Length: 87
Image (cartoon, rainbow, N blue to C red; front, side, top):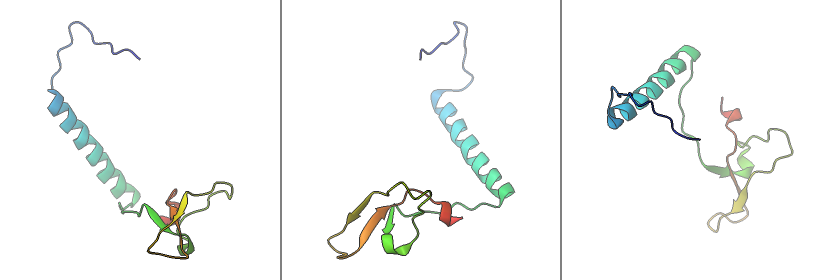
């Protein structure tokens, strides 16, 4: 995709100001949308113990990426691929 800039284009903001404006819009939208919808931002783990049941098996066909850890013998660890159960 080619970038097309009109010859007489005169930006009103510097590159830094543009980035700050984008961040402000993103954060404001997230905050206001969250308030209206009653949502709270939460942190989620990158991986969980399979036995925890936290990882959502959405359709039964996909298999989450899993691995074992030396410090947790006998436990399978899964990469979290959906936060559907977190709502």
